[in-house]
Length: 498
Image 1 (cartoon, one colour):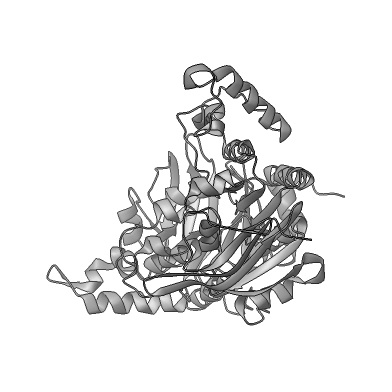
Image 2 (tube, one colour):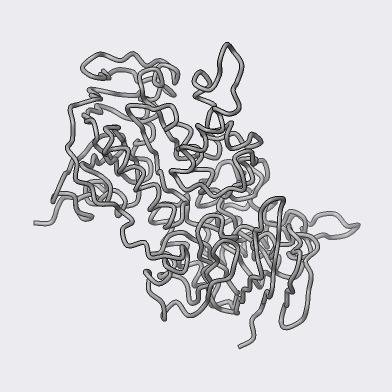
């Protein structure tokens, strides 16, 4: 069977970095091909080559067996290649229909936009993918899942033959993910060639027909998903087996470090109480909207609770701001690290040392050597992949940006660290590095709160698990009581089966 789109010998370099080296990729009609690789493997770069954003330094692209070049994003779109990104590129102030047809709206007499036809066609596209959305609704009034549906409808509006889905489930709930699977099957039935990029192996084995593996910008292998196992894929991705994603931990849990009682917020959570011990990893689990992140933001001084007491070492801690929290030894690595935890445009080393300027300066003057050394120490322990420490943070892959943010707060040498979805968007090899580092920190006596929506991570890393639902703590489990069924049922408000 001839591929719809085929790439051969594609190479792309940036100053100091070879992003792609002689890679290949085949996409077939009615087939989902999973592109698998660690952060920095070249996945984002190949997507930009496919969509005409980047021009390759070498190599050929064929569409239906004929050589083509996508000199612009518009040229790729006209050829039927479109991408649906993790963060939808749409306009909040436009309507659903306007977003779908932006740039290629149907026109009537005198070249004016035919608004009736535009809305009717938008309605038809939305119905074709099972999206019950008002074409006249403003995009800002829609949820994340609905925005993804609009992005998919927009992709279909250009009669796309190749649909690229880049981490499409990252911000979706379990129900919305299941609905996306149904939509992908519908697109396959329409004969679309789909490139599916995800770090989640359950998704890859659930939805993909074929796989292609990149590692360090190079092509490693491809084949039918039915002919490969998870362990084989992992070894292809990282160049070594990752047998222990969750490291074995056998250390003593120390004395209480943090005690929270009666914490409440007028709209986000109520009656929150728990204890965190020295050397402990305390997991917080819950479904989307359970209030976990909101509790952590209050503990870090981002928001203010309406009542409640927070004690550190049995002493009442007054936390009115993030500066107060840091002074008390509490730091917070947010879930949305791209917006809340990092400054793109600054080099890596300055991002890492930003909260530690007192350590790296003398008499008001920054000491560059100390900044580099501090940054090198912590990014090295997290296996950061970067050309150099003075590289612009914005040029790193998403997973490597996350490592920089974690390193930034660890460099302050906190006593309590709150990690909100610490491995979200990180490949399996990097997850193993982060988990090993967490275990090392806990063994050294650091008290860790880990918020995670991934059951394997919660069970594999936590000493105890607190389950939240609708802004309240509904269960706490440890040891053998920590099972997937126990946690999910508590989070969903279901009674345990007899």
